[in-house]
Image (cartoon, rainbow, N blue to C red; front, side, top):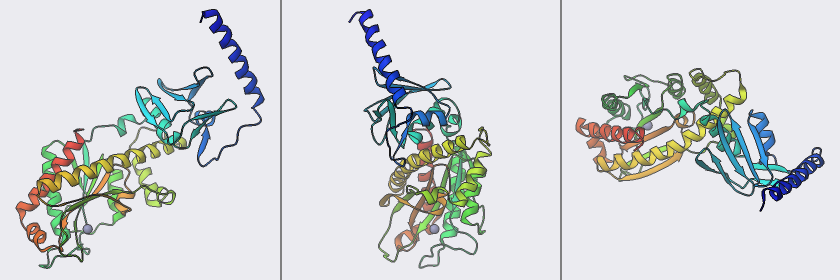
Length: 347
Ligand SMILES: [Zn+2]
């Protein structure tokens, strides 16, 4: 095609676009607001510049030097060189571009990350870790046949784990250093206030089935709307945002960072849980009961990647005996340190 013809073609398309645009100003196609949104609205709400190329059917979004390309009819969005998949294709109806609702969490938050907004924070290498020894004080946790108490076993393992991780260069914070009772809320507040990159809660299991043994690791299951606005979670967000370099008055920025942290946390926690259950069960030579998801309080109210490790069953006579020994506790601590540092170093 000659340049002149191309120009004429583009000009005609431009005219059609303008005319269609005018015709649809007052009458937008109907969408179901809980599933879809207008790209134009999303961009305006988030201060994103955008251009629509009628010929290629590509919308180019720009925010502080970062850009994303949205192709009508495709569920793929390119953010810089990275590919993001939406839950449904973007579509065009009477020159309005309509995108699925996860566009906000998948594309907008990534654009903000790329632009540097919260990138440093979220993608920062893991430097500091909160280790949470379960139970304590008036709450003994599970109790074995011999009287061995979960709170003592896990505190000892956590102290060993702390030393091992410090030797590997991590900053470590224990939610409790001794046999004191600390509420679950306080544990999550500590993790949010102290700006840690990872939260690991350590427990020992119990089951009426005394033959049951092995390691299992939990991450938070997908949170519903009510969980996402849980008072403690909101309080923890405020504690955490106090440490972030974001405009604390910009509620939309907060919301985006909050969504972004959540997406990051869910993805990373699941991966970490799988990794730890594998490494730990292998190194301490016990059964891998796998990575699971649960609504545990300390998992759903922490904002950074978080897992809860059940290191063995106090109700199982063999594992109870092992957990009495300092050598087994050291092995457990070593296996956890190994799994955590592999993950932290991106291995
Ligand atoms: Zn426990």
